[in-house]
Image (cartoon, rainbow, N blue to C red; front, side):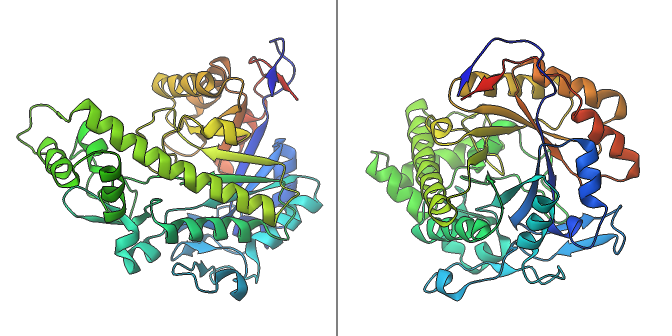
Length: 396
């Protein structure tokens, strides 16, 4: 994709996110999505544990997804011999929740995207602690599967392929395609504010056996490295001092694992669903970022069509994130911003925030969330789809 002359050429494309249970059983969902003007609806095809409000659904007000799950039927032949196998979503009254919801959206003339969360599964991490991220104190993050391991890569590629196989999805959106870290919005979280950003970065470094072995191949002494990381996270440490060469090696190792995971997943999707025409990746321009939007690796933008950065807070910091993303992927991929109409977003700040992101170079808005937003937030959803594009237009 290349850029052409800049100027206002219409409204910025908007992708609206939703869960299958938002669509199934609600005959008004597609009409609302169409009236909003979203260009695409991204539906969760594989997702983590959540407790979700459904304020506009005619049949329920709450859905509790008890574990990470694949929202498709489990085909025995696809998972035969696999160590990691996803749960099915028995809390949705459908045999094929994503497939059914995607068909409803597509039949209404709206493009459907498969929103796939790859390495975030507390159920699987707790059952297989040797495959989970481990910090420098040998503490396991059960919610975070480490991309260094072959079993995790096989799980992710199979999950993605099975998510889209035989569906009308034209796009896949990959979330948690890399390293999850210290921060986790889990049940009754009691870690907020306990560690500064530098300590959280160090506590997000995976020190599992697989990662230590890769460090050794790259010339680091794993035991010495772990001791250095522990010392740097101490309350008595006046500065988070880890040698730059050590950090560079650790980051290169992490990025290599993320690149291998992404390559495997994209190849599996292409084989399972040749009609998928677009691959989008959730990532942050900060290379050290971990979580649902892990740090952008040097080659990631070469492999995908869209890169989406989380820009939820309506702050200048988020706008700067959007600007950095646009610069990082320029000439390679579309730069997209992930925004939310949910609190703490306020009515007086949302439209201006989206406008600022577009002015900073963002070409596409990913909008959270078509099912969670109640009647009092519907007008904010509509605001996102009426922002004029001021970034350069893109053409093939």
